[in-house]
Image (cartoon, rainbow, N blue to C red; front, side, top):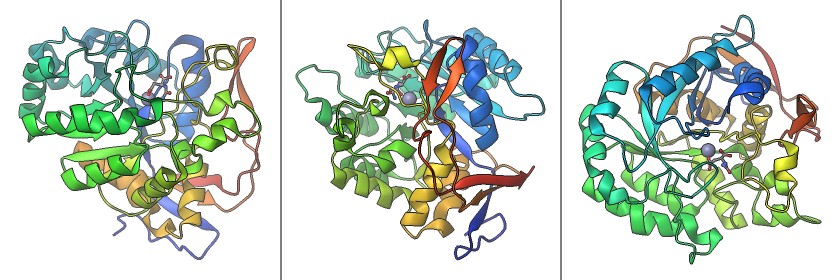
Length: 357
Ligand code: NCD
Ligand code: ZN
């Protein structure tokens, strides 16, 4: 049931409570300044990923990063960054609890060492993290998981499902009260696992994993701007993700995984993983919900489920999405570099309209 105004699904617009992005990379410096206005125009709050170089492993570093984000907001913006702690083999349970008690971070992020961009300081021994996870369980602090196996012998398209079997299921069994978000799920198996363990387990789903499958990565040639981790999977998985996202189930919510890299770092002999979707996220999600005949469930996915999982109130104010063709623009300039926008050079059928705050 909607707690905002009822939305008229037959009409050409939908009004929802202001949504949140529960998984976002903002980077720092010039990139932060360039990309933050896009997210701030779409979302009231976002969970900020800590994989800077060096990573955000201390409460002091997280507080300083939060201040840089707040300072980079466009004039008049009330966007709120929700900070996270990057877990390493050396993380201490007391430091986690202290940073949470001081209101500096709301969750901790588990990157298996080497799994993705700036994950080389991540955790090599998940079982060794038990004291930290026990403490998080005790204080009700969510663990956010990048769910990919790092064993180089595992096929890249199997890394998520292998991680679920080898690492996540044992972790959930060891910590039966721990709240866990499986971030940016890409497989039917992940959606099933999350449903089976809800409500203490939840998942974020990106716009791009709802829109592209692995074939799109090679459509007419190599498409580096569609490459991210976990990599897009087969069509049957994309369809399963669309079903999960549009189901209205409380365990699925927005996490854009917007992850800007400059064009040169993407169009390279060894291109970086990450899709910049911050400028076109809501338009893309709305299109998916429309195509699935589920606009009446969009508000739950966008604005209610995540807040409920994190124990936060839903946002005040509304945003309007309109069935109106729009061209977002191909790229964001950053000095003499640029970041390519996911679907930015396309004509999108949904646009963001006015809203009230
Ligand atoms: C992210 C990044 O670039 O920071 N890249 C990505 O492909 N999603 C890291 C991550 O979330 O895996
Ligand atoms: Zn991410």
